[in-house]
Amino acid sequence: MNDLFTPYKLKSLEVKNRIVMPPMCQYSVEKKDGVATDWHYVHYVSRAIGGTGLIIMEMTDVEPDGRITDNDLGLWSDEQIAPLAKIVEACHQYGAKVGIQIGHAGRKAQDAKQPVAPSPIPFDDHAKTPKALTKEEIKEIVRKFGESVRRAVQAGFDTIELHGAHGYLIHEFQSRYTNKRSDEYGQDLALFGKEVIAAAKSEMPADMPLIMRISAHEYVDGGYGIEESIALSKAYKEAGVDLFHISSGGEGHIGAAGRPGTHAAYQVPLARQIKEALNVPVIAVGRLEDPVLANAVIGNEEADLVAVGRGMLRNPYWALNAGIALGKDAGVPIQYTRGFPKR
Image (cartoon, rainbow, N blue to C red; front, side, top):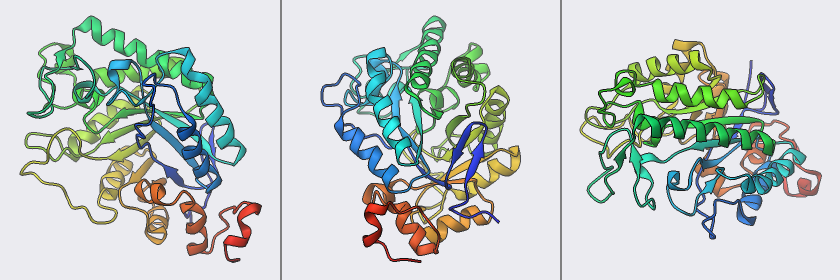
């Protein structure tokens, strides 16, 4: 039976445990040039020292106006490769594997002079009205996704994650709530995502797994639920996605449909349903910082990997402490052994 500290292998990706640090934007590029900084280096490498098996770096954008804010990371230029490669190399030195989330904020690009989206629908009354993308502009963004993935591969990342969740551009195309188009991108809600997947796969080694993060439930009036997200995920799996990272929400303000709760593990049932429906590996996320609970998610085969977000922001050594709590060998660095009780 697997547990939180059982190694995991998917294609060329081999991680020492089932613990994932999910993407969490740091908004820390003070020069606004998209280049990773010393903050990013310390932030990610400390989690590698802290025992995390897989670190997925924050949403990194394919063009300047695709950023949530101008303080976000980018991979639209070759000049942005080297600082990321430095982080990857250091994380590898301390036993972690590293992925990167590639995305485009779409209508949620706060600092863009003119945000873009499938349809000209603002996020809320305080947001800018986005420009509806032409088919030619869509093709250009798809190409930029591919170029960013090429740079990520060059930087040495072990896996790529595409951001298809939380109301950003791929999510906007796959939702009737935000996609009101009458062309092929409105008729096939998965089309844009499938084209991005194809562009990413064309730049990745054949044995490198591709992750897709999705919002499995929207919680907005008129939004989709688990049945629609299973259908979308099936299309994405057939297009080449190897692993799904299951989150929810983000497309709009929560409506009368409400959310299923904010209790610990409230999103795990969504991950389990997609795993079972598609026979595909999944990452579960959402208030899983209790090591016993996280371990149960793996042991009960509800997910293949567990992501700990806010808990890892509070404690970069979450994985080491989880090992102590569970009586497992988490690989405490020799320099830190005096600070951790022996099993």
